Image (tube, rainbow, N blue to C red):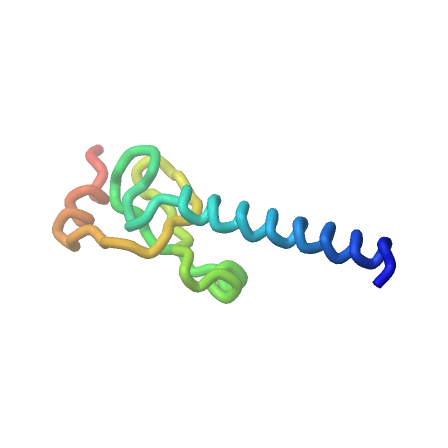
Length: 91
C-alpha cells in the first residue's frame, strides 16, 4: 500500500472519529426530560417532520412561558396537573 493511500485512510479515520466524538458530546449536553432550560417550566412537544424523522430520539420542544424552542433528550415527563398549572398565564 502506498504512503498516500495510507495517509488518506488515517486522515479520513480521524475525521470520522472526531465527528462521532463531537456528536456524542453534544448529545449529552442536551437536557433530558420536558423542562425548559431557561425557566424550568414544562415544554410542549412540537411536531417537525424533518427533525423527528432524522433524529427520533430527540424531542423538539417549545416553552409556552418564555418562548424558548429547541431540542431535549427523551426523559422523565412532568405530571399533567403540574403542566396545566404552569401553562395558565395570569392576566
